[in-house]
Length: 612
Ligand code: F6R
Image (cartoon, rainbow, N blue to C red; front, side):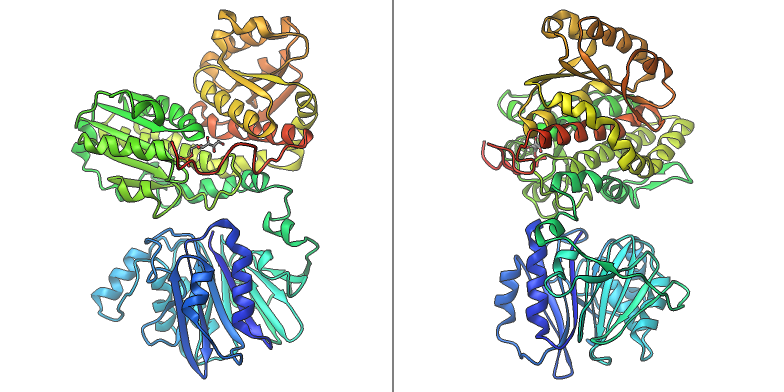
């Protein structure tokens, strides 16, 4: 999720690279750096902060520098500091590289290097081992060295390396992290994202997983994983800069909805082992006895993150047999909750900067309660102050309405529930196997929901919804918090007043509001309460409500009663909220666009609420 730019050509390389990094900076990166050859010597300049801070650190540089690489970092392994910023350099100082992704086995590689006393490390990052590995494999050909080095590596990468022994050459490789090569006249570029190259060229090659490339100012060669040359089709880029920033989508929100399969996969990476049916959260450094000793969990958060917490309650109570209370942070902090050291407080915050959540965290710590934070931003206030952190690897979220961060927060809660359940002996091995395998299957299922064909199923309903000023979301059990989150999403971006009700509550009041044609989105993904939910849906249909149902394939009773249906691929009921959230996000998105709302920046709202 970081930004990569590499340049080999006849222009001033540093100006091109800095310009490219600025084009990627709108995502709010935390540090930046460049590496280039100056008079045959490999120079690295990097600093925490913005690209402007990097420019300051670079000072005046020769206009004769024609090759280089640059990076903007969104911290993952290691805090956002000067040392942890990319590029990273090998010990001999002749090789530098920039990297997006995660090297899963970096700890064992680093340990091996430390044991053998072959390398010294100057950062906390996973990436630095790559620079050393390439150096170990270097025999005069950077491409071969990169290929050999990557054989030892598990994980994801989009990387670009340079060597002072091969001036004018960039070598890049891709696995699960995007890289494009921009083809120019007398120049070629490499970038993680198209906005960084379109000022220079509209012709590009997209690297596929397992491919490598050697790039000089007048030649680009792409190789497959076996080292055979690949003929690639050129892509013609027709987007303008604004569209390119959004990956070709009309809004960041839609781009971020589409990124959910990858965000979910990234958040589970290294933490689940599907073949063994286990979750590994040893990164949290809980002693098994400690997990057993907890008597209660408080989950504290705001807005969308609070809704994730509501789902977390049912999931943790079910799998770890541990009572959970969920509270909005602005209430928790002022109501003198009964806190003691047999409890765990879990705070959830995408930004890690929400003032109320931070205050709740501080209150809990003051009272001696251990705090586990689920957050998306390394180095955020929440991450600095919590006792333990479980990062969601959703990458930068730009749209005010949270989508991919929410889904990854849910994943984090499943992981905690399973991990705690195993430690407390409250989850059967068979059930754990099923849920872990179900989790591993979610990215593919999310992808299938996000196809054009699937999305088209809700467009017509959204046109109807967009004409109304009021709508309802209903559901039971795990479907109820999903309904609450669906209503929040619709409210904030379409400005349609939306209410969520536990479906069984309708007859206790809200049914009075059901009139002919009023939109009612019904979540019906939970087999155990399906009959009850269907009766509630009938209550709405009988009064003329226009029901749109979100259900699982195979729940045939739903299709017998309702025409407008969105089917989710079948999944374990406990995991259904991850899938069912997506059509609710899309409903909000298409209703908002039909009304011409400002989707990414809704009125009166800010992405991060740092005031009370
Ligand atoms: C709604 C939304 C907000 C945030 C809330 C908490 O789409 O994004 O409700 O969830 O402001 O923000 P974080 O998670 O950054 O603490």
